[in-house]
Image (cartoon, rainbow, N blue to C red; front, side):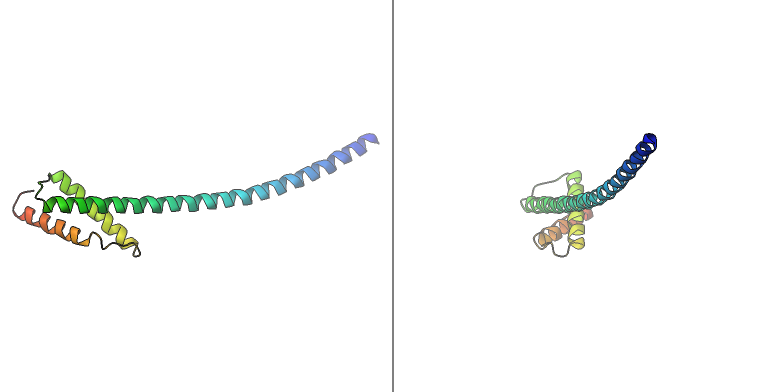
Length: 125
C-alpha cells in the first residue's frame, strides 16, 4: 500500500515537475525570441551606422581628392580608382538613403569626374 501511495506521489510530483518544465520552456522560448529580436534590431542598427560612417568617410576622401586636384597634385591611377570607388559608395548610399544630406560633395564629384574624363582623353591615366 505504501508502494502504491509512494508511486502515486511520485507520479503527481512528476506530472507537476513536467508541467513546471513545460512552462519554463515556453517562457524561455518567449524570452529567447525577444532576445533574438532585440539582438537582430541591434545588429541592424549597427550595420546602418557602419554604412553611414563609410559614406561619410567616402565623402571626406572625395572632398580631399577634389582639393588636391585643384592644387594640381598629380595622383596615381590606383588613387584615381580608389577615389572613384569612394564616389560609387557615396552615391549609392545617398541614393538608398534620401534623407541623408548629400549636397556637400556634389560639386567635388562633378569636378573629379570631369577631370578624370579629361585625363583619359589626354591618355594621362
